[in-house]
Amino acid sequence: MRRFVALGPALLVLVTSALLLLLVPGLVRQADWAATYAAMNVSQQTLDDDDLLKRFDTLTRAVATSVEPSVVHIDVAQSSGDVMFRRGSSGSGWVYDDAGHIVTNAHVVRGARQISVQFHDGRVEIAEVVGADPLTDIAVLDVPVSGGLFPARRAAGDRVEQGDRVYAFGSPFGFKFSMSEGIVSGLGRTAGPNLGFTGFTNFIQTDAAVNPGNSGGPLVDRRGRVVGMNVAIATARDTSDEGEGQSAGISFAIPLQTIETVVEQLISGGKVARGFLGISFERVPFVINHDGGFKGTGLRIESFAEESPSQAAGLKVGDVIVALDGQRVQEMDVLRSIITSYRPGQTVKVRVWRDNNYLDVPVALGRMPVAATVDDRFRLRVAHATGLLFASDPGGVVVTQVIPESIADKAGFKVGQIITQVGGEAVDDVRDALGRLIEAGILEGRTVDVQVLPSGEEGHAPPETLRLKIK
Image 1 (cartoon, rainbow, N blue to C red):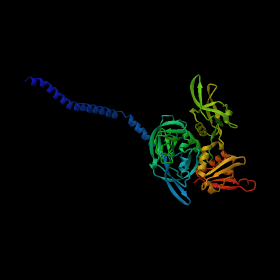
Image 2 (image 1 turned 90 degrees about the vertical axis):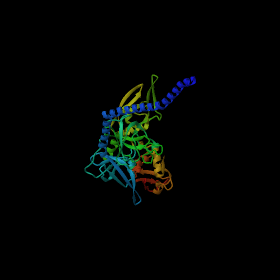
Image 3 (image 1 turned 135 degrees about the vertical axis):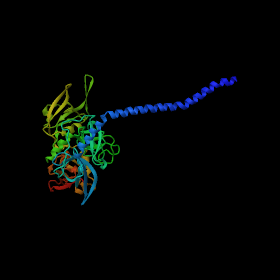
């Protein structure tokens, strides 16, 4: 009997513990569910009561509604011999003015036999190329319409800043009139050869989704104003907007200032004239240290060109350029691109570090010589596209190599020939010849006449004109 009495409390405790093990988790879950339900109700009530996100959506829709009528989809047809074929969905563009001018990338319409422009309302018009500038990858088209055009608003005079919200429009992978959203990730980016771009690069970097087909589409700000034009993407597979690589969160756009400067000159029918400082810099950025503290980096002036506008304005050898019109510069390519976005005669404020002080020097820009627009990147690009290599020689510009079966070989170029004229203009050295080729439209698919003399017989044989064209 005692044993039974002694075991009773123990059994009671055991049973109670078992019940608690079974019931407590359920009770805890019930409490968690009740707390979650209460939190959901509070959150849903907050969303219902606060219209901040609704207003944000309304503003984003307003950007789409205000910009889409200005965006166009571009299809390009090319030809092979006498056969014309459609290349497919090739790019985007946007309405620049009431006169029917459309702005897009030069690479979108390069080598085009026929260009179709589709507007947001479904209309399709055949466009003509007014002009193209391969050095900035900007082209202007003209469509023969007299009404129903909605020119895009432009943020002229306003500079975008890192962190600003932007929207990219275009036809990614042929999905016409698409819109993506992001922020300005960086400014003053130089693409370089790794992006397949050899022109002037002072790009806006964004994380807005941009894919093949977005080329030429506008990049707009939160007010629906154009601040740039989509031009390239960076991906692991393919680092140009012309390939099959997909967006990896890094895309680039041409700044509006560059676009307006080039477009207005193309529309007026003249050749694109670019601003010129007339300065050579040390290749390595200069680190400014003063009183034991780091003051930044810049580009140290090494020498001046003959009749340099910068030297005439008061800049000196040894000055360190740190900014142009308020935009920091740490790379030569960026500085060069900023300057070329101005026209000759315009004044730019150059901030320099001199004698342990910052100075602002206004410089009235000169006109960039044709030879100054090219470098080794262009030389390689022309060589790759044509199969033609040439070098400076005491006797002139001499053909040094012609790749068999290349465009140059089929055009009749031979090693040892001396190039005397390109596009009807005399040339004296390699840079001059390259500049004339580019200015005559070789990178745009135009036919360029090149006058040559046979090697060693320039005084006896008549000059021969060969026709060079990149297909």
